[in-house]
Structures are given as structure tokens and as C-alpha cells.
Image (tube, rainbow, N blue to C red; front, top):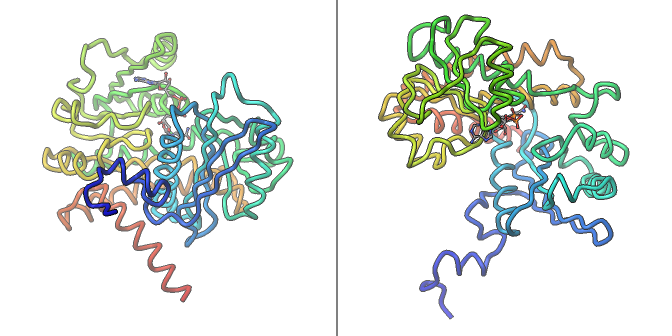
Length: 366
Ligand code: NAD
């Protein structure tokens, strides 16, 4: 039988793991199952050249196992580049647990998952992500030391979101300097989409600096609350992408820069916290470049959270974490200049610098 006539979907069925579209040189993929607790999890270890693979555990009710595998492959790779570009000695990993965090999570399931993490002897270090909490990490800590994001009372680094917001703010200022000639955001119109843990603190920084902040969120109560607390304006238009603003800050979901939205975007700068903002890294990155929109790569400017948990591993405190996060300003500016020089997108520029760091380390190790 020849494979030449098969569709990509049929081919994918024949190579269900290494044949996945999102499989990009991952080192190890661990499938974890426990009948008694109902645990079904996948740990993806993308790259450990720079250090142990650190990344959160996402608990999500995926429609099927393909989706879960695809997610863990994509997310773990993202972590490799996020840590590499941030100068951390960490590799990239991520885990997914296939379950509904609201209705199916049990302490036993979390403990069992922790035992699987422990069985990898530190090659993978976990943390919180969507659907998991500090409490879950504290529980995992009872069965393994290979966990971060635990409570401050037991030696953890606390909530990473304010640090993430600070990094996004720094990245945004660098993008403004590149695009508008000044890092000052006073008077700049900024639209923040999603005012959750990160978005709210970002709004705090921006309003304190005197930016004209507009906010939007699917949670109307939060919009009213945050608007009142910081004096931010509620976005009332029908199309947020077409909003007449200087800066668009995606802080809710990924893939908001896509085929449907990209031509409507009027903002000159995009800088936000959401992971994987570009639906297609190559295509949408290139269109933004052609339109002259300064896009601050998401995995670079939202690295404050990982910089913060890294402190738990190497033993630095909040002050050092904030100092390192502040440096996102310099790195972002370097990326913009490098991209301009090489006539490539900022996403490509950030990726190539991260990849070079990994390649250099590989050579050193030989
Ligand atoms: P969060 O869940 O606290 O907040 C997300 C907010 O977005 C919520 O208020 C939610 O109601 C809103 N939202 C959801 N869908 C929306 C939509 N379609 N339109 C408008 N608003 C919508 O999450 P967070 O911790 O603030 O993280 C925000 C983003 O940043 C996520 O994409 C996350 O993956 C990414 N991120 C977070 C961190 C961190 O330290 N928390 C680190 C790196 C990346």
C-alpha cells in the first residue's frame, strides 16, 4: 500500500503521535492513565537543552484525545521558546489532564497526577494553568518536589499574574517606543480585551501612567467593577478590532488575530498577555508586518509569570523577579530592531533568537 494518495487526516491516523501537525521535534511524550481515579493526562516535553522542561498543567474537557495531544504539543513547544528568549535555564514542557475542572477534578486524581510527574525525576516540572490552582500544586507538592506555583506559606512564589502584567506593560512600552518614538503611554488610547488576573493589573499600570484605557470582557460584572476601580472607559462599540485606538492588548484568549479580524485592526501596536495571539504565526505575522503594525511577540512579553516561578527553582525573590521582568522592555526593543534589520516579522525574530540560544548551548555541551 502506498501513502501518497492518502489525505493528511488519513495519514495522521497512521502516525498518531509523531505524525501530528503540532509534533515539532518533541523529546518525550508521556501518556498517564489511572483507572481508579479516572486520570487521563499527557505530559509533553518539548526540549530540555537549556534545563528541565517547566510548564503548567491544563485541565480541560477536550472534545477528543487528538485535541488534547495537539494542545500539549503546541503549548510545550511554546514554553521552550518563552524560557529561551527570557534567558532562563529552563526547557519547555506542559501537561494536560482530560477532565472538566469544575465537575471531575478530585484530590485523588491530582495526587495521582503528581506521582506521574515525580516518576520523571525532574525532567518535567509542573505549575498551574487553566483549570488548575495553587491548591492543586500544594497537593502535588506532597508527592513530588518537581512542582512550582505553590503557596507562599510553603515556600512558593505566589500569584504570577501581577508579574506577567508588569512584563506586558514593559513590552507595550518598548513597542510604543519603536512605533511612536516614545515609550510614554500617557494620553495613548489602549484597548484591553479581557480584564482577568493579568488584564486588571495591566489596566492599573496604564491608568496610573495616564493612558486612555478602554476595557472589554465577556463578564459584564467585571467590566463594571474594573471600570469603577481604575476609571477605565467601557468599550461600547460593536467591533473592538476596528476600534480607533493606538494599542490593542489581547489579554483574554489566543488566536484573536486571525483571517476575520486582521484587516479590521486599526491599532498601530499590539501588545498583550494572551498566549498564541496569531492564529497562524507565519501568515498573520507577515500581514501585520506589511500593515506596519508593531506586534510585540506574546511569548516574549508574557514571560513574567515564568520568570516569577523560576525563582522557586533557583531561589530568588520577588524583587529579582520584577527586575528580570523589567528587562522585557530591552529584549522587546532588541527584537523590533533585529526584525527591522533582517526584514522579518517580530515573531520570527524572537523565535530565531530563542532557537540560537538553544543551538549555542547544544554546541557548548558537545
Ligand atoms: P483570566 O482567566 O483571569 O482572565 C481572562 C479574562 O478574559 C476573563 O475575565 C474572561 O472573562 C475574559 N474573556 C474570556 N473570553 C473573552 C472574550 N471572548 N472576550 C473578552 N473577554 C474574554 O486569565 P489571566 O490569568 O488573566 O490570563 C489572560 C491571558 O494571558 C490568557 O490567555 C493566559 O493564557 C495568558 N497568560 C497568563 C499568564 C498569567 O500569569 N496569568 C501568563 C502567561 C500568559
